[in-house]
Image (cartoon, rainbow, N blue to C red; front, side, top):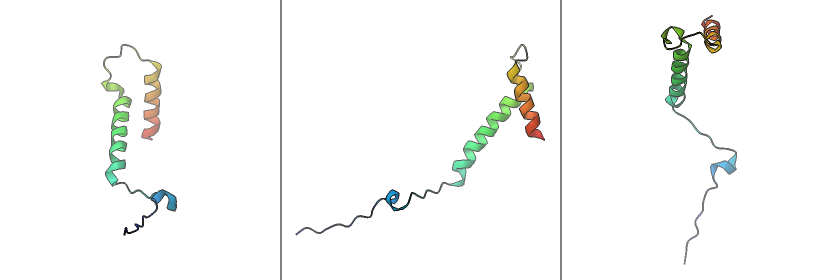
Length: 68
């Protein structure tokens, strides 16, 4: 004689899935993004550029606006 098994329905069918992320799962990508953005926005380190293209003017303006 075989016994019947009772299975619970998956979480998705009971109103959604609740997922908790550790603090570093959000902090590390944000830190990497900010670090790369600061490297892009620092025009004093760009020695290889011969002229000042329009993108550097735009990025400099964005840096000035975010500094205030």
